[in-house]
Length: 616
Ligand code: ADP
Image (tube, rainbow, N blue to C red; front, side, top):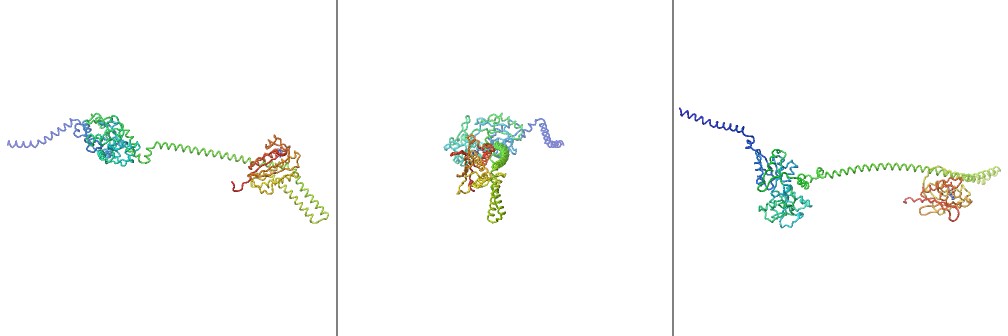
């Protein structure tokens, strides 16, 4: 039994042992969990931190080139597993957008673009062994064959040039800026601008092989390839190198800040801080790489703006927004000028309308005054004519008496014949026809006087001056039958047409004749002839009334045309001043002169000839 019991016991023991071990293990694990701090527990399951890196030399190089960063961070910041992920530029941009990485290490140009698009925020800038400083580290080297006849950047015009791509910082953009500044447009002026992408080494080899004239690569690339024996020393050179004292490589462009490492919007602030501190503490690697406080990337921003690339690509498109962003200063200026111009125009319009109104008002006033003056003139004319008639009244009465006396005589003679029974028709008919003639003469005198005395405003029309003068002389002669008027206008002369009011001309003429007769009366030559001369020149007619009267003393002559100047007891002194006004209003002139060949005055006036219709 004993062995059997022992065997059974042994069998039970062998069944319980694994359970027992499991229990011990679980208890031990629970005890450990309770005793250890949290960080040590998770150390076995560290949080992944993804660092996206721009793979400009190809994907493989990433792990080699940046492993020191990963290793240093892993050692310095426990609890995290740092992973390096390689991307091309577009892929890296996408990864930042998608938040699939926590940090980004890229070139300065790409970083500035990410800063604009995704708010990437630099936390440190790498210090390269060849860099002058973190701020002055990268440029473009335009590599050409040593023997090529290219010296200046402008010599690249018309050449076949290789570059990485439009977005490549050292591999295109930095050189492009220099070229543009000397007036060479790389996109237009080269025979061919070929973007051949990464890795850059291929472009350098293409230049060596003569497949291209030049290649735009980042600075130090050529020197590194020569050092590694990938390119024969002296086979290539950097075109138009800029002297940068202290910089170990040759550059065709000015230098720009080196690559930064940047945290992203979603990266935890605590982790960013830890990574920054760790990187700044990192000693330089065997190759000479270390990290410094972030550089100023403003200069890169300026480069992009000038080249209209990266965040400023919109400047290439002529959209309203692009124009607005680019030229807002000018647009504002133009707007201001337009506003000033509009205000000025409105002001000028206002002033012009105001002045036009004033001018119209002044013109209206002038017109009213002219109308008033015309009415005054008409009244004066009328008064003057009445005055002349008044002066001629006795002469007119005498003149009318003659036909009336003749009529009475004929009537009486006929009555006597009838009373005596002498009724022969012939003498009676003679008598009646004489009566008719004499009454017509009297009627004509009255008609002329009435026409002359009527009050009406002057009215210019085309008249025959000779006829009008003839009527005036007839009227004067009728009123003064004793006065001899010598009027010989010339039988061959045709009508002398003028634009005038016939009444006004008669008024002037009667005035001159009356003055002449008065002067001859004063001189005691009442029966001497008054000579009326008529002559014509190219444009005017001239009428002169010449008397052999008393003439005038020089001081009287000087006042001849003054209104109210008279030497006659009954005179008004208005005749000549009114006549002068009338003649001048018709475009002529009135003047007087003492007769040279004898006593008396010659007073005359001119009137412009009426232009034949159609003449100018
Ligand atoms: P009125 O005949 O009423 O005096 P006028 O204006 O016609 O007014 O003449 C002004 C003055 O001019 C006359 O008073 C006279 O002294 C002078 N006068 C005008 N014509 C002659 C003339 N032919 N000979 C001399 N004196 C003249």
